[in-house]
Image (cartoon, rainbow, N blue to C red):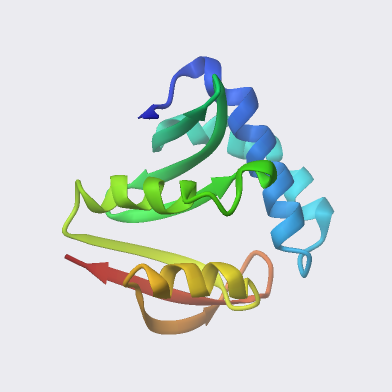
Length: 140
């Protein structure tokens, strides 16, 4: 079930955010994610957030700011079950255009977005990490 984020969800959402960023972005220092944890925890509730609840636990979430996807995160034990696609489809159903940035080295996420209709518009360096990112867009 997908529902809007509630304040009580913050601990579960942040656990998923931290664990999955560290795991998936092994090309970025774990310290980077740890150093940004409190900042993200503070600003995250300002985004438009939806959580996927499975067996009364949050299994994943999507964060949006207007037509920009800030991120899609699925807990490791729930991956490969279509949760990311359901979260993405929730965003697609309420917008005509979606944009995002994804690290070039995060090849599984790049494949996921391409498989879901996103196309690359350009490549740029993330000024915070020095890593290259693709900008991608999806249009209805």
